[in-house]
Length: 236
Image (cartoon, rainbow, N blue to C red; front, side, top):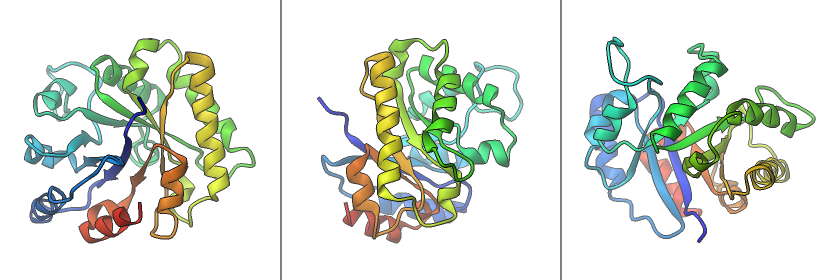
């Protein structure tokens, strides 16, 4: 049975309390269908508002060690207790702005998968390359080394080239090529059908075409505008 496609809303750190309360009220009115699963990643301080939400909720960040004396950190055990079962790892903003290393992100990947969380791992080049797959291959080899194959059933890959957020989305052919490469990588090496979604500059004019060639889409700052979210979903 094929996995359901995903529409992922990464809200980053934009909305204030009154805004997220209003957004929550509106997004839970959206009637999804068998085309996709809606996954919302609100700012981490608002996660408790979604404990009993009708939609899937994820955390943008978490600590890779169990609960304990770690001031200011958020652990997966507490998040799962609030029905937060999605995580996100490897977003380039965590590297460029927060200063997270690849080693730290790999620790998080292991923790998330071993905790049986639905894990979205972001991959993608930082700048335009003639061969997009070379950077992705390097990241895959690093992240997947020594991981238990059985844990990969909880993994979803998001192809998220950082430069695609600042310009019109890459051509459909190039996106399709990288998505196919990632799928073939997992198929040949691990004998599994991995879900691959795309994150970039998603617009009314390209969302349907992109949605059709991969297993879902991650919205960027559009995720904070419920009116725009509804407009984009109508195009699928």
